[in-house]
Amino acid sequence: MHETFEKIKNIDFNIDLAQSYGMYKNAREYDLLDWASSVNISCGFHAGDPLSIREALIKSKEKNVVIGAHIGFDDIKGFGYRDIDLDEDEIEALVLYQVGALMSFAKSYNLEIEHVRPHGAMYKKCATDFTFSCSVAKAVKKCSKWLVYYGAAGEILDKTAEFVNIPYASEVCLEKMYNTDGSVNTVAKDCENTEMELQRLKQLLSTSQVSNIESGKTVVKADTIHFSSRLSNTLELIKLSNEIIKPVPVNYKNACLSGWVD
Image (cartoon, rainbow, N blue to C red; front, side, top):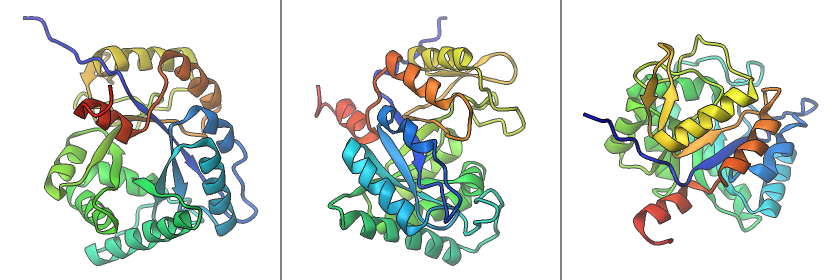
């Protein structure tokens, strides 16, 4: 019996913006903007100050990319990579505050945000803790039922979206290694080999598969690919990835699948 694989015709490329605070700036993040279809703008907790957020909104508007809120724990010193234990009310307040702030900021420039992506420790916890993920998703839905919840591809994200009844986008990272169940292996070192990552992209697009830690392949649902400005080869990677497939926003992809766009 032959296994059939799904070919991916449309996919989003997302990047992070406003990953700065005061004197600490990330000058490389805007280099990626020409090659992305959506951006995640920090909301002032793990990163992002009013001026860097404003700049990110203006530049995103100029490039006509889809805007999302990049939310995280209130941990500037740790840049949002340290887990913080919160109850459900605290999680809700944390999410509502950040998303609400960016929504209001965006409206002042006649912009709307379309998605929410957790950052760092919050992202990792959403990918491994169903209860926590549901709390974050419920808070996102309170901001707007139309917001797309971005998260690591896998069973927990799928179950969260079904339980909360929220639009969602399954995310894959080309630099990551995956476990056999499709979850990210957090122990393996990030790959910064552009040629290898491009092969992973081609494999993902043609078969909906990612390489796993047992030297095999695992089928995943992939709506978006995250390109991190922290890695040395990201600019080269996202440019060459655009030669393989032109990225489109998640909602555009959904419209294509629904038949609204040919």
